Amino acid sequence: MPAAVFDETASENLLDRFPDAAVIASMVEDGILKVSVPAEDRLPMPFAVHRGEKEALLLSLQGNRALLATDDGRAIKAARFLRIPFIISPKMVLRLAAQQLVSYSKARMSLEKLAKIGRYPPEIIAEALLSLLEVRDG
Amino acid sequence: MAKPTTFRIPEDLLTEIEKNIRDSRMERSVYLREVIRKGVQADKEERWLKKYSTGEADIMDVCQEMNWAPWEFLDQLKTRNMHLNVSLEDWLCSE
Image (tube, rainbow over all chains, first blue to last red; front, side):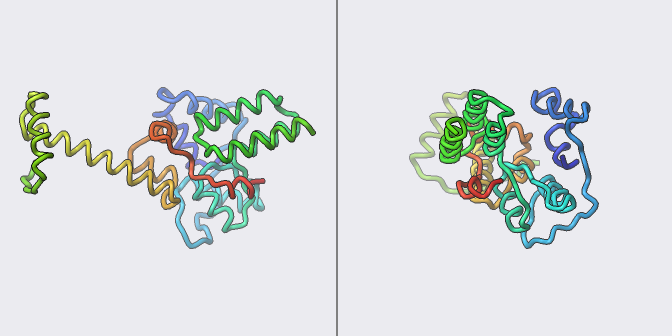
């Protein structure tokens, strides 16, 4: 996880107000998530992205085009430009279900939450639910 | 320090303003300042969220401008029945 993203999502002043910020902070504390700062600070692309997205893209490039997890359209556009492989949350749920790391019902519930709370567009959730059915039915 | 300004408004809007001032029992200038401030804020939110939905801005650009935490961003989208700016093509290209 880029240091800038940690600052933006789980810095000290956010912990009391947002439970999800505390979850991220505790995952970092437990060593489940690792916070890193990229060595480089210049991205070879013709348009700007915010600090957190920029660090995430740089970390991916430094990690030999490591998989970038993002739900931001602009960061995805940058990843595609830089030929960095990326994954969005509904696809992550689908992959976990395909590898039987989560049950069908848990995956379905997660996709429904991504629609309602995560504000994912309905057409993506519909595709994800169809793909999940295919995973379930083999 | 507050600075004076002058502008023309249509009569029907002026009638509505006068009515609201009587209802709110506020001073005319205090009421107008408050309404303009709310309007400017609402307009700013609308413009930045439009920039987000067209891909001109990312989530953190909007949060920084509006002084929102990223966690508040999704609530703001929900309030306006808006969605993330991730496309079906992004879904297809995602690993």
